[in-house]
Every structure is written in C-alpha cells, then in structure tokens.
Length: 178
Image 1 (cartoon, helix red, strand yellow):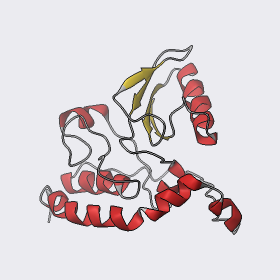
Image 2: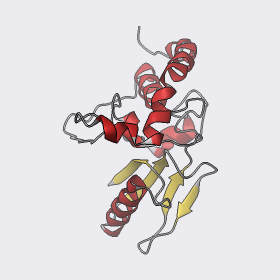
Image 3: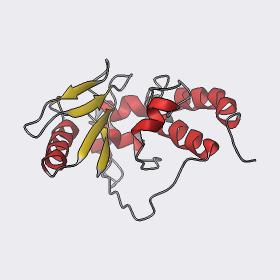
Image 4: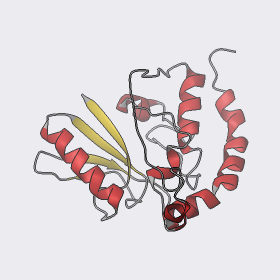
C-alpha cells in the first residue's frame, strides 16, 4: 500500500517530527511505499530519507515554521497518486508540484482538493478516520499560547485566504463539469 504522510520532517526533533519518523519507519518496515510531504523542517528539494528498511521520499514544504496541527482544522485528508503530481501537478503550479508554495500554511490543502475536484479526479475515502489533537481545542488555551508554530500559522490565515481567493478563478477555469 502507498502512504503519503503530511507533517513535519522526520529529521527534526519536534514532537511531530519524532512521530512522523516512527510512523514512516514502521510503515516502511511493513513493506509499504511511503513518502512524506513535509510541512516543516525540509524546505529545499525532493530527497530520499534513509531508513534501515529502505529510503522514504521527502517532498519539501516550501515555507517555514509550519506544522500539521493547524492544517487539520479544515483539511480533507488525502492520498495523491504520484503520476498525477508528475503529469498534471496537484497544485496550480504545474507538473511535479504537490503543494503550492505561495501559502504560509492555510489553504494549501484546499487548493489541492478543489483543483482535483475541478479536474474530476477527486475521490473521497469515506472509511478513513483521522483523529487530531490541537493545542487549545480541548479548552487549554495555555497550550495554544505556548506553541509559537501554531500561533504564527494562525496569524497567516487572512493572507492565505487572500492568496487562495486570487487563485480560485484559475481552479474554476479547469473545471470539467459545470
């Protein structure tokens, strides 16, 4: 089975990075094809991260100080076929691009999903269940305030919304059904 993990680089010592490292290594150990779309800690180029069970492909984030915890507040959880990325591109930035680099954090996944829907290639996995734990969503505002990555991503929401709004006509132009 193929897995695309969306989160911190396994090479960083953050809590998410350590979790991603363990998850990717275990999936690879079990014989799966694993790749990581990094949201923090790997900004330049596509590279293979070596594990004792074989390499794991890492895709760069293209922005800094990011973490998955903000993304999941509005994310559609997805898998992306590698040939789709190579042939068409999963963002408006063209072939070979998984996630658009023009966003600070918010809306990168929304562009990917809405573009796939416009092209008629999106299919939801209704059986998947993903549980996330966000700082502050359990009522512990001190946890939210103590997380500078979360805070900086929240601060970028309006800018990212404006970027997405400017790009939306280009997504609509690719719609195969009206």
